[in-house]
Amino acid sequence: MRRAPGPPRVTVLADDAAIARGLADRVAQALQANPRLVLGLPTGRTPVGFYDELSSRVERGLVDLSQATTFNLDEFVGIPASHPGSFRTFMNAHLFRRVNLLPERIHFLEGVTADSDKECERYEREIAAAGGIDLQILGIGSNGHIGFNEPAGALVARTHRVLLEPETRRDNAGLFGGDPGVVPAEALSMGIATILQARQILLVSRGAAKAGIIARVLTGPISSEIPGSFLQLHPDVEVVLDPEAASGLRGS
Image (cartoon, rainbow, N blue to C red; front, side):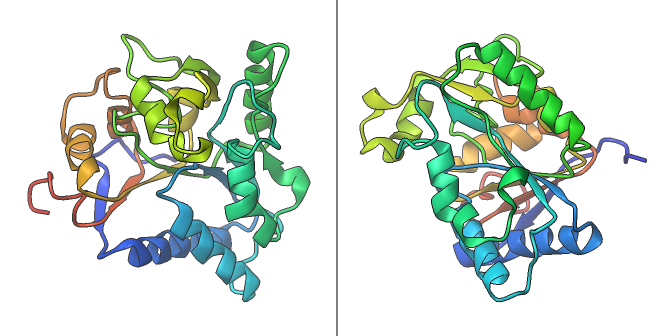
């Protein structure tokens, strides 16, 4: 039985290393309770330390991912999985090549597809066939997006194709040699409802630049203009922050 919706729990940890350890602890605990855990995974700068810590624990035999299943949140449209800027390449480098996940249990959206609608429908079917996502890990964009659900007058519930905002392309320019102009203009992303159907959600954010959006996500009105604010509707959300990202919250 799910809990009734309540405010997300906020955990403030001292620095990047503490956040990495904290996230790895939570995944390890979830795996101990359920070795067949279904994990939803993000990309971006924020989870890199966590992936390194989790990989190190797997390499030392402290964590076992051999029965786990993963679904990544999103992928750019128009570039193959082998492209150096793809999220699949990112995940291979930072996690998949270092851990004992079985290849058939790693799920990704395909950015090069003849029919993006059918690709999104396929992904939704695979998530359902896996029994749904047990633990979804999220970052937060500077404009409040989660996954690639950009601010809009209305949000799309399920996995879909999305036009990326200029600031989102700037935020991802590091994967493309620092040039926002060569970042793909579109992506495929899990929808808000897909994300919110995860049984548990961990949102992680670092740095003073995210303090304002974190405050709006957690304490402001729920609005499609701040997609992350919909996390307030979920019954089991933990938000893991460093002191700078938490600085806009009362009592932080």
